[in-house]
Length: 189
Image (cartoon, helix red, strand yellow):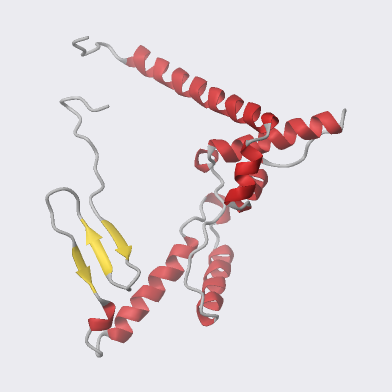
């Protein structure tokens, strides 16, 4: 929700590579998009344009590394993997597993809760050793049909409802702190 004092945030620019290879830049409402067809570049600058694209591709490989995982050796490993992919004809940047739980969807977190509760029921007295990150990655690796099938399982539905309720409770607690810190409330309601 925006107020008179807070302007609504809008994306300032987005770049898209279209199916025909044309690169389209969009800048928001009221501004015409721009596009460039890389095949129309003069031959004398094509090597620099390709080099810049490859540099950007390789740099993106390391952009998800952070904290203790962002080391020279780790950066070298992801760049080496990127070079190998390029030489093999693969042009994509896989999403790196995040170390932040904020990046894990409710469905993926529910998959973790589902596995924990199912394990506890079938293995009384044993401790579940799976991690949220590993279970979230396993869930994300499922194809759409398998995710849909899992979402139809009642135990998973309970796990998802539990995760959503916990997230909403955390959000409510955060908002309560914000309300407590606000000296005045500007509302016409």
